[in-house]
Length: 424
Image (tube, rainbow, N blue to C red; front, top):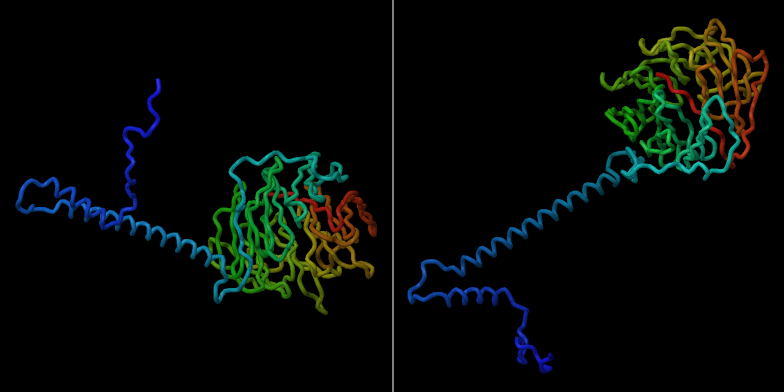
């Protein structure tokens, strides 16, 4: 059943009512409404329309003030953030050090793609190796870490087996520090630092940030409990001696300082060391000093408990000042760059026979990067051609050369990075 076609019962053909109402018209309408409800001729004791309008005005003012306050807070917050990012007057310009990965996702890291990297013939070695974009372990595992491996300068296995700490090469933006977990996931801990050094167990880190030195702990994949201290222009952390940070005061001059964050600012030691190769298990530091007559590079065992005072010194082998070198896990051997027969060579030095003249033997081509010693006393390093060199002190004849292993599949400009083994 259908009705006649036309307008609905509640529609009229008259002009539509305008919906644009001014504030004055709205107030007048409220007053008219209250006035029509008044039945007495005498004036009212209270102006109900005025009360309603004043309440509306107060509510509108409160909303306006609250909105302005929120806008002011947002403006101040943004301005403060821009000031942090901008250059501060009177302070040196330097890259901003980032703690942690600003792009990290709270979701679990995906499983690494073990087939994405070109194959590199690394076999099963005695040390973990970083080659191209792969971290190859002694157990035969190949972890593809393309964001970390190509930038790696040195790396060490964490003492608790929880992964690897990898320090990047210096760039215009500074250095970076990553943690690589056994499942292949990578976590950026630092970015933009000028120098980075790790403790032997990989659970402490120190770095240079602008005009300050910073020391902190590493727990899992996080930087914790950071302490800061002002530093001279050339000062940089170069190692750990127990709970103290070893600081080189000037890269072109002798002298170090020890900084125990819990005890106050760094304390100068007035030592004569040009470079410190590392700390032995007995706590003594092995340093390159200037000694003898005439003055020449010498080796010394330095005691951090007595402000790096020399315990024993021996002069003889010609050592270079590039700082490349490392001591064995048992503290007996030092493998460092020097000269033998008028040619640059890697020298193997017996630290137990330091005085009166160290026993040194040519061990192979010069070191082009870090040295990784195994717990069994074998050293591994890369030479300038990218070959891996293996030095076994007990089986090296006098004047003999250590065997080298060319690495097939290396990308241009890349060298293998042997991973040092952390110790507690």
